Image (cartoon, rainbow, N blue to C red; front, side):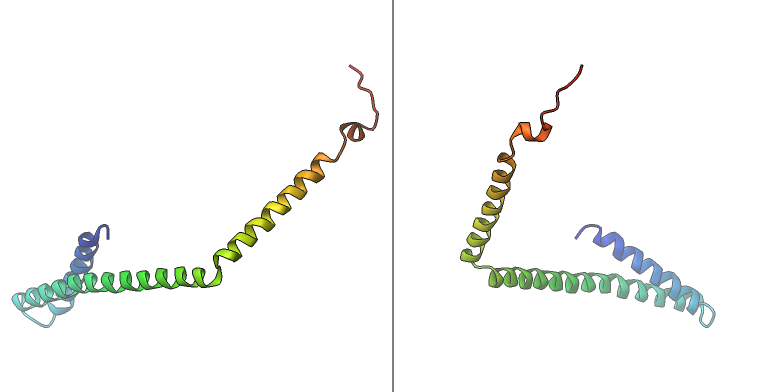
Length: 112
């Protein structure tokens, strides 16, 4: 949770300024400042609450994803997939090695 107090301070300051400027037209300056302070505190604390809720949702999503992965793939499935991949790699290696070098040049002689 980097920069939490900085982001919350920016949110609170924005709420302070907006509340003050909208309130000053209808109230005396002391009442406007008091309401702006309440707005600052409310949004400052609301930022922390919002971050806690987001972090809890993120943790639950990560747990659900890891559970789905474990449910989808058992150890036997992973071993079979690994064997299949190794088999395909060995076939590609064998195909590459079976081509004789002289057939690539087709008997052409180089002139220097």
